[in-house]
Amino acid sequence: MNSKQLSIILLTLVTIAILAACNTASAGTTTAKAAQIPEITIKATDFSFEAPAQIEAGLVKLNLVNEGQEPHHAQLVRLNEGVTLAQFQAALQQGPEAAFPLLAFVGGPGLVDPGLSSQVTLDLVPGQYVLLCFIPSHDGVPHLAKGMVRPLEVVARTEQVEVANPQADLIVKMVDFAYVLPAEIKAGRQVWQIVNEGPQPHEIMLVKLAEGKSMADLQAFLQSPHGAPPFSQIGGFQGINAGASGWLNLDLTPGEYAAVCHIPDPASGHAHSELGMVRAFSVK
Image 1 (cartoon, rainbow, N blue to C red):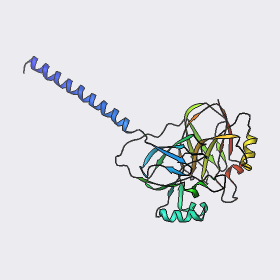
Image 2: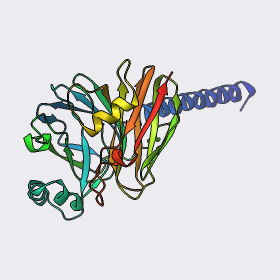
Image 3: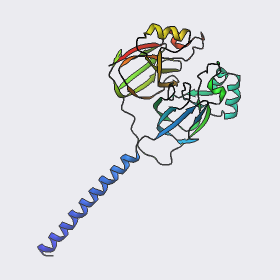
Image 4: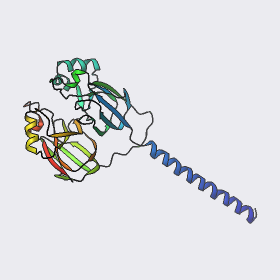
């Protein structure tokens, strides 16, 4: 083999190596795109949910869009192993307290006024789930009794892909009965990781106080909810069991806010907000 033939062989090998590197980089780009967290839209109306009947397990963004004339949320619960939908629905007819032992609270997009939306990210395992809206109408009847109950099956992924957890800008801890949350938060898009460190289920509902209204006005309305509320309900993260966590995706504008937990305490029957689980904070 002469020097000219050797040069041709070396040039060919270098070309093959470059093409292989380009293909590898291209494949890496494709993998990154495939690893995006899927997003599911849940439309709430008066009184029903429009949502997929089945989704794949793993990280998923749940985006609630309130197209109704009343406030709505989307509490997601997972039925315990062996519990059927029929058993759950029968227990629900006896009241929420009869159904609670049959399920686990796993979060969901929080309470929003008509025309608004709320988005959370959850890491779901396979199982039978149900979307519920516990909010009562003006007649006192909970929305779930009017039809806002939607089964949702979570199945194993068909493809195993690496999906990174959302990068949290703030970690919010929920305990019995308080929030570990800064008094001042920067405005704009952000992700909060919500962690329940209390033994009871907790939620974090966010309200923005109306111009000229105070925390005293909020507390008075929570104790006696009559007339127009002194705040707007802008979303949040629905109830999760002790030790669970998830992510709340927000875009906050400047103003005065409060975090509220409406879940009742089994021992006293009082809402957690009545036991001190209300936290004021400013967005600047």
